[in-house]
Length: 51
Image 1: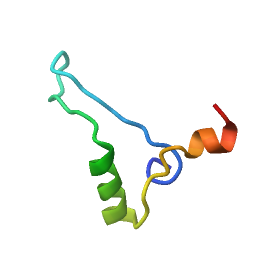
Image 2: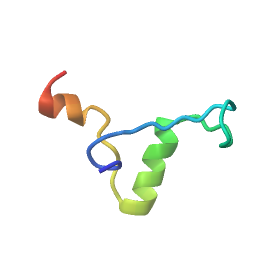
Image 3: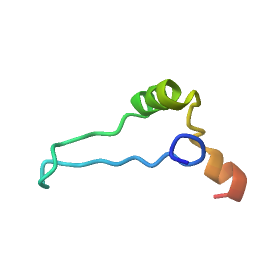
Image 4: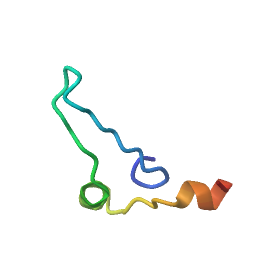
């Protein structure tokens, strides 16, 4: 679902035990295309359910 229905950005700062990570829609989209052959539909949830 993360690649077909809902874009779920996960961001980690240097305030935790995990290494810093910033979300990039472009990188996420390319990863979904490479692994699953689909691109995320970034506005799907509001189109389907309103918002």
